[in-house]
Image 1: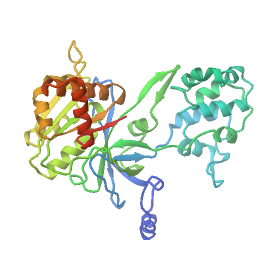
Image 2: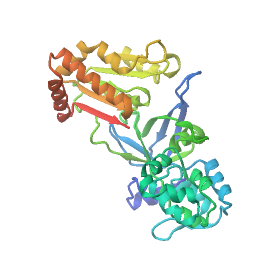
Image 3: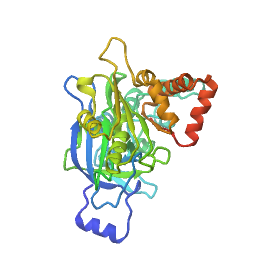
Image 4: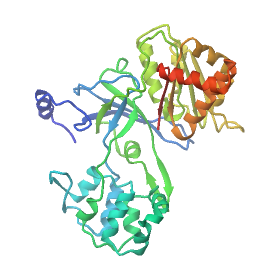
Length: 391
């Protein structure tokens, strides 16, 4: 939605703060692919203007984007069901209506299936497979069916349907905002916010799938367009206030985002605190995100140490946790001197492996047994010196 100058003035005069329920239309200043030729990944660096929004943020905070669905997927749904895209459907609790196409594009979540949707949809079809799938004893199969499938799969597989467009959209949840770690410092970039977004694309159940927001940003948002955004404060992940405190950051892939913000903040608020970054990805030649920037920060002394792990560049896969173990003595010395330890990125594997490596470092270099090392880490957590932003 494009706001006119008049709208902006009115919003200010009525003192309407921009928030999750009233997102700010932020203009896209820059949208570039950070990955080089030959990479299997596409990571977008997006710069947005916050001019006139009154929005501010701290390193560690997230930016929410309220996305819209892929027009091709919306068209496939309408075509599959033979619906009239201009037909009005009720969307809100107050009886608000929207044309069907607009509702499916901007209002409803159409890429996620839930147990509840399938159970309620069963009332609109005699399809035996669906009736069987929703039975209590088949709860495991139902859960498995929902994983990696969307509304179009359900409509294609369990027809014929005795349902109007209104019946089907009434099953759907409202579109939820997607949160991304902010990759900039407002002190270094006044009136701007930067993001590092990995485009999610995969094939499942015979169809190509796309991440709703990440592929919107990768394929359909051009410089000059606007995105509806809001700031989400992160109370559990923040840069220590003292610029004299040492920081250790572990952020492979898009996990680099908040640490770019930490480093930029440190560059502005010059202090005696040292900083050490562990970054990893697949190939150094094509996947070293923000390489020249980080190397410049190292030259300038803002970034004290930079250790990288590129898993596909050697016969043995090397990850960030291996680099931590390689430098265990120095790592433990920094921790003993009060360094804050931060991890950002993949919850499933990386964060667990990093946690494991950290316990091993404490155990080995602190000459403790496993229980004592775990207690030491718990203590760091209590002091706010061990923080994780994992997803």
